[in-house]
Length: 249
Length: 290
Image (tube, rainbow over all chains, first blue to last red; front, side, top):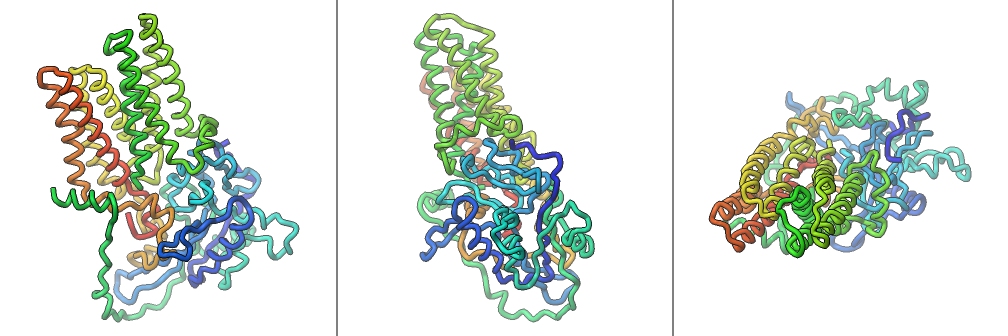
């Protein structure tokens, strides 16, 4: 069923500490490493060693620069982004086949890959870019919260958490149950003002982001930046012809 | 959004095909025998051609049948059911006209209503998405239905209705564009709400997570198609509304009618290209793009 459960017994999710993340991308690599050879189809790469490498990832780290309005040097924040396992997940209700579902027992949003027709509508409905259609398998891939690790009794107990959390060298990622107000993640989120991404989208994300702590301000030195103009975008084939033709009108 | 040919052809052709079925179900034009067969064949070629085209968009088209499962929650699934239901009902109604020279009026009206509902559900696949503010409006189903009825009126040779619908479609299309240009700003979703970092200053994307492209950028961040949006809007209006209106206003002639159909279809394709290419998905904000 692609209707959402009215309530889940637990709300498993992540706290991501933007103050602590150093942007090393270790979580990206460990995620790909674990998930390409476990649950579901592998996370394929296309032209991995060629000129235009591209591939499926369930976790990606953006970097943002904040320019303070009152002057001073800009600050940099590394921003890991994966599925937020939303309570009101729009990706689940749009699915025509029932492949996309939210589990009642722990709130994890999963894709049943043998039912997925690869229409991509769930990825269209997700505001966070948490879902990627695998170009080789033709099915939708997303973060499983390492459902095949967290309950896996064949692993040592300290490994029964998502690969990204297990590997983070900075301790910027935390895994736990948000339905329990006394859990490590609930306490951490309450203490540090854990926030929702795009709250106006009404998705009620389970994952929380801890905002960076205030930092000292530094004066800005900027000599070369104005000379670094972006390179023009070029098109090829039909698009180039269309572009030229329309330019002439 | 990436203006994939498969979805442009799908939405344009099904709109025209089901639009024509709406008119045929209401007995416009009032034909039977071979002439009715030709009208129904055109409608079915357009509708089924469009539906087949939609499967080219799928990663696993061999499982397309599973799309019928979740009609309780999914607009895509509802569309699949409504499309099949209207094609079946209209096939029986059409068989009566073609082979028995009999009009089962009630069946025709049911078929018309189902065909209209199919176009509505196609539009709702897009209109339901809060992630694409330009689409997330009641104007999207209005635009799809108006264009389908316009195409249906032209194809069915209902000249007076077609002229009326052409003017309405032109107005709806212009309102849709004006409204759409403000939609992202009005939605309240911005880089500030996406990152939650605005308290520290103006947020700028410093570095993307990957050096190459990826599925998200290919599918959701399509900037090239927007470069000539203003010109393409004028082209779309001329082809879709202007020339068909001119051709149908002149004394009736089959060549002019064919011309009206051809330029209208070309205009609908242009308009649908813009519908996708200009639509901004909020995920682009994470990349500092729109």
